[in-house]
Length: 56
Image (cartoon, rainbow, N blue to C red):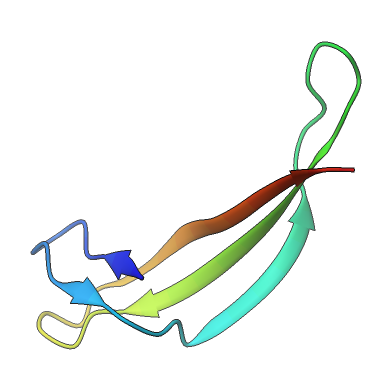
């Protein structure tokens, strides 16, 4: 569930999700991020939010 940064409305389902590799930390380990793309039903704002993180 995402929260619109503009008006604060809760958006239940993302329009699209994808996975990507994040930047390595100091130890050289990378994070796999799952990103969700949301569109607010109230104000129409489109925003991204991290849904999950895991080390690879």
